[in-house]
Image 1 (cartoon, rainbow, N blue to C red):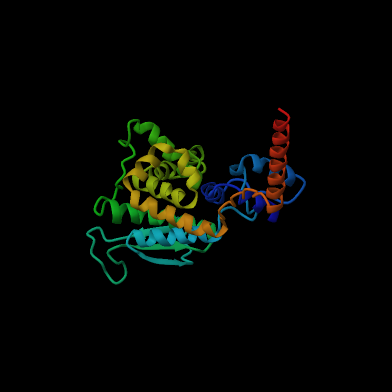
Image 2: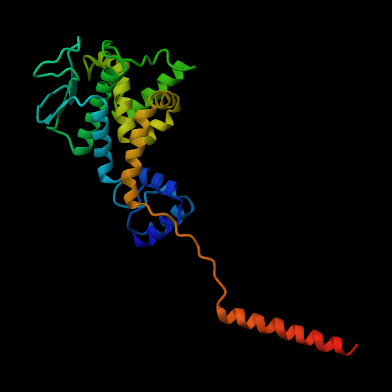
Length: 284
């Protein structure tokens, strides 16, 4: 790690931040380590410098905390509900009226029965996407603010890009779902997953948990970041704040100054040259 950090801290500060946020390949111990390190030196984005996991552990927690406040701080319950057909839910009153159970900004419930922390965070980010859609974008329309059938210059391409992202963050196999021997309500589930509100919530989960997946589908990502500049900037500020713990400014190379001894030697040489030239002039 010490050897890697030396090379890591020679990179520009922005490049160090990006490398810490990259979460695809990790340098591990073993026979291939030397080869990986050499590859990383040529292209720092190829691997993750810390070699432990992916991005800093506290990064996702800080991002989720920021989103929760941004969407109006809905009430959150994370516990063992032991639901059979769902992992989480965002509930709200359609007229925007608050009660003691469900406040006006809504309530998020996440089932922690069969999930690890990463899955719980992913489900939570999904439900926060529903809260964002309802509380920030459109408080009355239950179908979702973003209509993926009409967005962008090429809405079909954009919609397909978003569907690919949703399948990566929360996989489902359409062929299996359409098999009546395996599923009774497969078509209904596909329609549900491809509805505007579910597509946005899944996309939002990827946006919080793994932004590199979202960036590959540039069409909607560009629309969203241009519309929601304050929100995107807030998340970027958190990224920089967290990763700054691991980042150092590259040291500037100091120019070698001539020592006093060298200066005196050079001065003596110059005086000797002048004397020789004067002696030669005396012969003419």
